[in-house]
Length: 405
Ligand code: NAP
Ligand code: MG
Image (cartoon, rainbow, N blue to C red; front, side, top):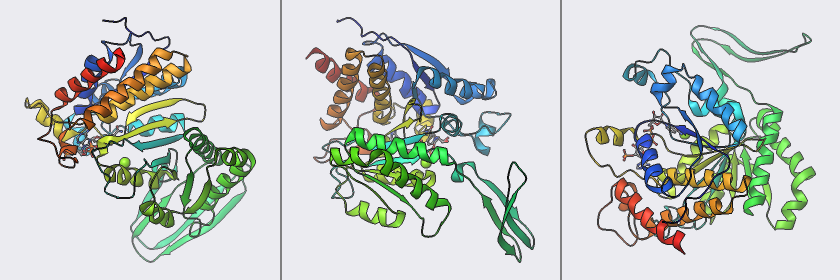
C-alpha cells in the first residue's frame, strides 16, 4: 500500500448526532484513515456533549473555524421540547448551525450532486442549480409578540444620540401576532460579494431575487446594495467571463427557474434560501444529494451535508438493522473540506485525493449501487438497494482503482 497522504494544517472537525454520527465514523474508517494522515481538531457537537458543556463546545468550534479557516460538520440535532425530554437537557439549546452562522456571518451555498442515472423531476434541469442563502438575520433573528387584546403596535428606533423614528404598525382591535426583524448593510454587502465571487469562480450566471415591490425599504435595501457592488466592483469581471447578473422578483425567479436548464446561482434571502434549497434538492433526486458550504466574508469555510441527522434510520440502527442511509452529501462535505485545506496549504496530493474520492462516490452511484432513497428512481432500474456499509465499500474499491491510476 502506498504512503498515506500528508496534511499540514488541521481541519476543524465537528461531530454530530444520530445516524449521521454513525455514518461519520464509517466514512472516516473506510474512506479516509486508510489513505490520509488525517489531521483534525475535533469538537464533539453531539447533543450529549453540548449538554455537558452547556453548549460552550459550539462556540469553541466556531472560534476554531476562524483560526484554521476550514471545517467539516456532521448534522446535529436542534433541540425541541421532545428532545429536551429525550436527552434530559437543562436547556433548549439553540441550533448549532444558527450559532455558527451568526458567529461567522456569510453565505451558505447549496448545490445538488448530479449523477447520470437519477433524472431530475424537472425535465429541463440538466445542470446543477446552486442556491446561495444569506446566513444572517431576518426571520432567524427575529423578535415576536403574541397580542391578546386591543391596542396600538409601533415600530420605534432610538438612535445612540437619542433621536427617535416611529411608525405605526397596526391598530389591533383584538388578538393577533407581531414580528420584528433586522438585517445589516455590512452583512448584506458581504453576502453580495460572496455571491459575485462564487459566480465568477464557477463561471455561472447569478440571479438575486427578493420582493422589493412589496418591501420597499427592507428588500429594496438588499436590491440596492447588490446593484451598487455589482456596478462598482464586478460588472467588468462578469463581462470578461461572459456571465451575467440580474435582479428579479422572487416569484418571477421561481417561474424562470422551472423553465430553465439550470447551471446558475440563485441568491436568496435567509428564509427563501431555506425553502428553495430543499425544493431544489428534492427535485434533483434526494435531500441526501445536496452539498452545503458556509463561506464567511473573511474566507472561512464550513462544509456539511444539507440534510439532518436522519432520526428514523438511527432508531432502526439501534435495533440492529444495517440501514440504507445515503452517505453522499456527507462524503462530499469531507471531500470539499479536504480539497479546500489542500488548496490553502498548497498540497496537491490532498487536492487530488479529494477529486478521486468524489469521482469514486459518483461512479458507485452510476454503477447502480444505490441507497433506498434513490433506488426507486434509478434509470436504468436497479435490483434493490444497498445498505450504507456496502455502499461505502463499493466507493472504497473504486477509490483504490482511481488512486492507483
Ligand atoms: P432529516 O434528518 O434530513 O431527514 C428527513 C427525512 O429525509 C428522513 O427521515 C429520510 O426519509 C430522508 N433523508 C434525509 N437524509 C437522508 C439520507 N442521508 N439518506 C436517506 N434518507 C435521508 O430531517 P428531520 O428528520 O427533519 O430532522 C432530524 C434531525 O436533524 C432534527 O433533530 C433536526 O434538528 C436535525 N437537522 C439538522 C440539520 C443540520 O445539522 N444541518 C439540518 C436539518 C435537520 P425516510 O425516513 O423516509 O427514509
Ligand atoms: Mg431548512
